[in-house]
Image 1 (cartoon, rainbow, N blue to C red):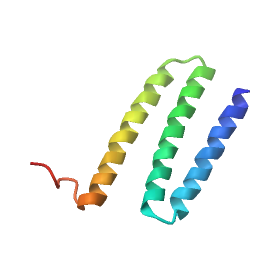
Image 2 (image 1 turned 30 degrees about the vertical axis):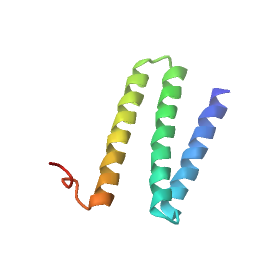
Image 3 (image 1 turned 60 degrees about the horizontal axis):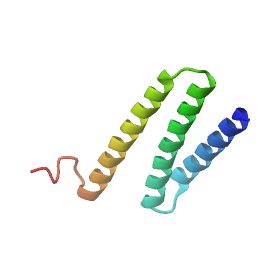
Length: 88
């Protein structure tokens, strides 16, 4: 059962990567990359559950935080053209 869940998550990640590379608009690409990050967090948490290693949940939370901050940086860069813009 867990092998099926793992394979389904990997399939979803693959489909989102295809969408990120061939997405027709910038918004499609950003949403696909964010989805890959979310599915990766889910995959890390599932692997931690399967191997009975709770420290994988810490790694998954850290990856989610890095994904969130990275996405904010990308969106700020594309909105202002510079990461230091808008800082007073």
